[in-house]
Amino acid sequence: MTILIPPPHIKMCLITDPFLAAVAHQVQQQLQAEQQTVDLIDLHADGFDPVMSAAELQLWRQGQPVNDQVADYQRRLRAADQIIFMFPVWWEVMPAMTKGFLDKVYAKGQLYTADTMQTTLTQHPQIRVITTMGTPNWAYRWIFGAPLRKALQRETFMKTRLWRFKWQTFSQVEKLTAAQRATRLANFRLK
Image 1 (cartoon, one colour):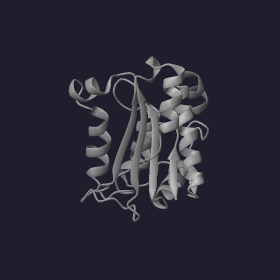
Image 2: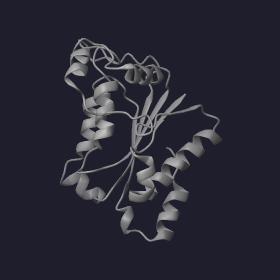
Image 3: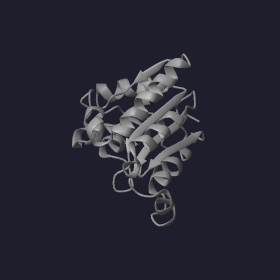
Image 4: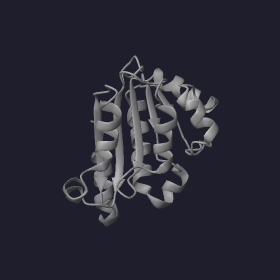
């Protein structure tokens, strides 16, 4: 099963980042064409709150899900053989909704062990990240040091031994003509 986490605020994304919304739609179609079971986690539609309250932090420190919604997300992630995150890159990193999801859901003592940092996701899912960003790829990598890759691949998933990580990004899409965007979209496939 594939877990697809589309861009936060997918309806707003149709206005603010229509290309990413189109990519999300295309990914869903590709997965369905491949007859993969897709479990869509739409954080905005679910009313997910990325902010960790003091009471939730107390539960998190005890290795317990912070609420029923998080427990449901964790159950669904345990069943996944692939998890796809999709979001725009803002200020060189992920939006707060995505970060809050990782903080609350991919939690110590729940989806990875505290002492060994070993994931408890028995299927060891492949992690895919699909992003859009305004920064040129070369600048993101060489000037800013690719902070998103460090935060997600190295400091989250590799640390917990989820080795299969792929990141596909679209840089400066807003500078492309409509025809160039259409070509990029037509040529896009999950690798």
